[in-house]
Image 1 (tube, helix red, strand yellow):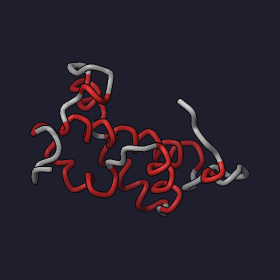
Image 2 (cartoon, rainbow, N blue to C red; image 1 turned 30 degrees about the vertical axis):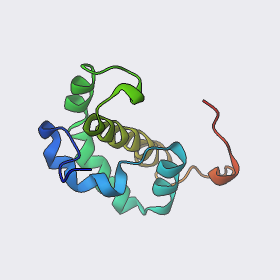
Image 3 (cartoon, rainbow, N blue to C red; image 1 turned 180 degrees about the horizontal axis):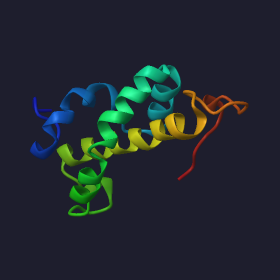
Length: 110
C-alpha cells in the first residue's frame, strides 16, 4: 500500500488509518471494546466532524466493497469504525454494551 492510503480529500484522517480502518466487524468490535472512553471520544470527535463529507464522497462509488478502489475502501473502514464507536459514545457511555454476552462468543452472519 502507498504512503497515502486515503483519497486526497481526506488526507487529514490519514493518522487514523493504521489503528481504526479495520476491515471486519470482529476487528472493529475488538478495537472498540479494548479502547478506553477517552480514546473512543477522541476518534469520534475527529471523524464526526468529517462524516458528512465522507458520506457525500462515498455516494460517487459503487456500494460493493470489492468494486471500490483501495483508498476509498480504507475510508469506508474508517466510517464503519465511526459507526461502532458511535454506539459506545452516544448510547452505551462505555466501550461495550453493559450486561450482554461477550461479543467474541457471537457470530454475525451477513
